[in-house]
Image (cartoon, rainbow, N blue to C red):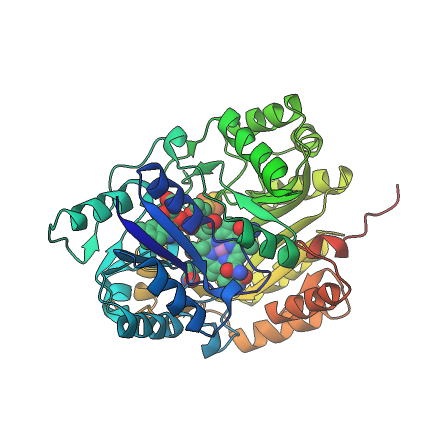
Length: 449
Ligand code: B12
Ligand code: SF4
């Protein structure tokens, strides 16, 4: 049995504080394997490291594990303070002054660029991909005195039913319920689509791995009964998989009368009123839609494999079912030009009462096909470091003009948000009035019939 001190390094609070689910899941796997785990959340504990050092002394771990969720905030209009790795490097250096045990890192940010992040942070081990098997294996190898490499490559993907059950820490649960009104849970991993900018298939695998609905509902009941959770966000890359497993999960929620409200990410395609009505009965209260581009040409430019006919149909079904929906749309991607920007602004108007969050430029993640397109378009070369965010901006449009057009077109519309910081201001106002949750859903006013 080893002792692992687990730190969630994520201190981002926008759009709201997010429960450190990755740390909880890997802690669950470590506990299951018989190890003793102490979970520490840097956001909850605050910037002063003294209490952490005190806990470290008392706990005397064999290993420190750090979960790294975000590298940056993928928003081209924000500044250096939205690059999170510098603080984590300082955290690692501070830990080194306190103890000599190995430091291992993992998490989605780490998996996007493991070698570069491991070298920058100067950690002993960087574990790529799912942590459930790799982390207990690392702990056990180190305890047996084996020498392990710095970057530990991923293992065979787990089957859906082998995802570990998260070890929810009651004091952290209380913090997140108070500050964001929700917890989170994963019902599947991976994505079978190939949108060119997206890191998710690289992070979680290129096909959907679905968790048995019975196990997900067990987890929801546990959250509800043991922790008083009323709302969750399902963190799946895409909730509405084309095979329809999501509908089976909803049926199980209805059958077992789970009284938890939930929201998730959806692909705006192939969902009509019947599917939405079923999900609503199962507790769905809002949808975040990966609309991603503003016109058919730019959707094709990122290999989205859907059209505005699909998007309008899903949007209308949401309005008809009185379900708040938010479209996330990135402007300035491949093949954007003045014509597509104008077309896109027209398309945004047609989304009616739904919310639109617009972004300018697309964060280039290594390994995603957009990276090659950016090289071909001479935006970066193959050697350019992507550790600090670099954005793809279509060479066929002046992005300052595009941003000015977006600002002008959205001005005065409560549910049209650009720049992204504008959305945060609106959320901050509602937070001030004591509201918690997604908050954008409160902006939606459904048209009277
Ligand atoms: C769901 C999600 C959201 C939701 C979260 C809702 C909620 N209430 O939880 C919302 C929409 C709010 C959101 C917001 C943001 N997100 Co987000 N989000 C995701 C998503 C899809 C899933 C994350 C998740 O919870 N997974 C489930 C858990 C169980 O998996 P996991 O954390 O990956 O952990 C596993 C492994 O990584 C590993 N592991 C984790 N920790 C550790 C530690 C060790 C030591 C080891 C060995 C292993 C290990 O094992 C775990 C189990 O297998 C990821 C993309 C993805 N598919 O991963 C992006 C992602 C993490 N988000 C990202 C970003 C940028 C953001 C925002 C900054 C965007 C913005 N401008 O608002 C904010 C930040 C919010 C915050 N406060 O931190 C980026 C980060 C990349 C980057 N460049 O930094 C990602 C990777 C998406 C992307 N664009 O590529 N997000
Ligand atoms: S953008 Fe969504 S649908 Fe496309 S690959 Fe990424 S997760 Fe899958």
